[in-house]
Length: 456
Image 1 (cartoon, rainbow, N blue to C red):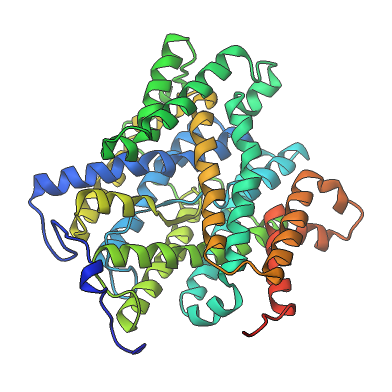
Image 2 (spheres, rainbow, N blue to C red):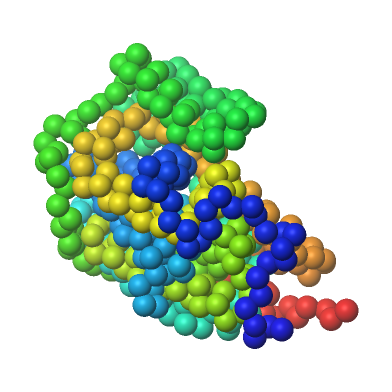
């Protein structure tokens, strides 16, 4: 039966208001698209904002990077929903900036800045690696069955868990006010803790509300309240709007292009894992859309979806922003609304591009104090770690699996906390293992190969 398109069992099918190929009326499509926008706009811009704040990127360049995050996400969402040739899954899929890459980019980028490399040169290296790594993901889309055998759910779960755990430090730094607050001695002062803890508490409380749309928009609502609170406390900074143009014209390779092996190694590994995460998210969307979840049609959707994941990350590097990936958030919105029409995705794409071309939107987002953002990113980063735990919970945790998890987490978190352990090793080795995610991921991959599973 594996060579046939198998639709979900009728009893498992959702009672959809609009199916995959249905075309809602414009007003209905706009409302459905707006609900998706509420769930995704904060996660799309947050990675870029955190990276720019950590590396000391100028307000003007940060504004451009955030704007391009929205534009590139819109282009990817259009390709995923419309399906152009081999590009796209042909499902209601939203794509946005990935959280998976934040840790290595901030960690290695900060080290480059501390060593005296100008911020513009650091950004050139980052975007050069983003472009180079995108070819890995595009290649993976063509050899998915082989890659799935090599990088099993055990390896994927460990890497995703490591990504989340290594990001917690960045989340706490944001709650205290960020790296700038560390420099001006205001880190973790009363104002910063009040703002961050208010946002965190609101997200928890809103998730207790029984109104479904409130739960799905909890992070956005909490950030809006935090934004207003920051205004009353005198902490909003609109410098990013001062010299912003009326329309943001995309500028290819604004920082130029360079390359860094120390950044490429962990990024390459994360590109592989992001490809496999996309498979799970696309399969979930397919199931919610009452479409096949195995067979040729499903595999074609998977290949097209992962191909756009890579191609759009290539485009992101060209236009000065960070790698993108399929978002899981929209699956919850599909369940909530019963709208699985891929034509709604085209509306979402249009809204993202329009917002991205208006620099005022990025300027307003950039004005939010990092402490306000910190209350939300702690939840987001924790959710990444929880996603890794969820993947691991789906496999049999026998003695072999537990040994691989223990060693991989110990090495990965150990290197992340005590990077000095590598300082006397050759430069090539330091480049490979400088990221805790890369160290733990490589350990998991190697151990998964050399410790054979016991057949039962």
